[in-house]
Length: 463
Image (cartoon, rainbow, N blue to C red; front, side, top):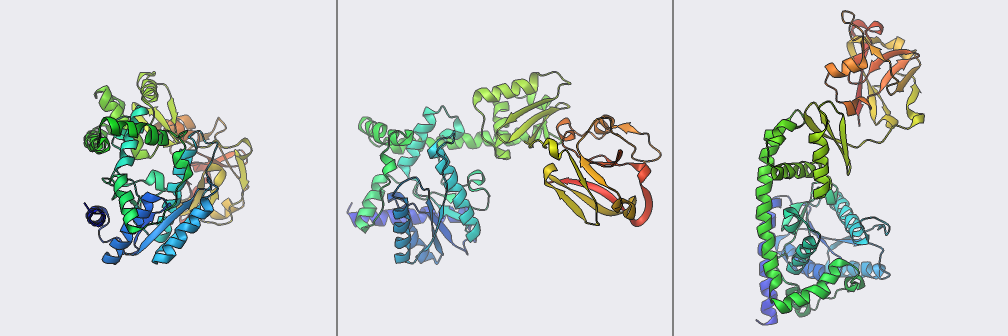
């Protein structure tokens, strides 16, 4: 095939792939345009060239998003190169400089990737762009599967990269899709296109640094594989589609199990016990994915389940993982966000109510609302009191109505089915030694009166 025929073939394939991505995920949503993640390297330069032709034919605004990582002494020159190329072709160019931690436990590569996607997420949101195109190709897919295999990944990891998907954990929001219209193309095809089109691109010196595992696979392993089994990358990429099909099936099973095991806002232990260990693992991973947290290792997941399922029936069990806490309460497992401890100096805050609708207390991660009501505290009396917001001290007792008995907080919590991990965070309002209000429970009746529309009812809302 002549070079010009190679170019024509790539352009046609690219158009079909992007047509399908738009039809499936972004139909009627590209009024503000789409964007290319543009590093200035070979792959993204070819992608941008193809996208320019496509968008001009389709009358779609096109943006180029460039991320300056600050890791290379050439980073400023790369930024200038990308900006100049976009100016020359009349493409809207945006860039953002990020700080990459070199001391992260995840490594420089992972930190750079995380910062890059977060920056792309901000840029897409600010520009109202629903689709970002990335230049990953077939060789990248093969590298990814080899990496995941070396890490001992499961079916989800071995599924590789999707042609198009949402990535809220990467971008920081779910308003943008990540599309890969070149995923079935070989790198050699992109090289031939760039050569025939006379495209100018930069060479990132870090791509040859074999201290990074991906680079070592690219330069030391993949050439050997090509010699042993020519065309291996296409077959490895094909395996990714089989893993993706298996992952889709696992997802369907997990969704069904999630529905059947759901109780209240958690998962019922009895229903989960009826599942096979593999289905239970699959359900937990699905649940964690819904919560947007990092997947635990196989051994960590087994340890979690041992604590949750094998502990004493009356035990208060909480397992910490990533940004969440997993609790067992009354034969149900719940997830909640991990909460920072309230500092000792903030455990009691004095304040005076001056008629506001609500007062925010960041130390307690919430707001106290003062609602007009037919029953509650006299507004003038409440404004005259020196009030304090505090956590549980011990010994608090509350009478919710004059015809009801005074009860300790443990009894109130149990009757209202307030789980133990929430009880520790619920604040109280007092005046002097007198308890007026317990969040999640109610107000002290002896300080309340009935007066249509003239009373104040207290209500606590967490951030």
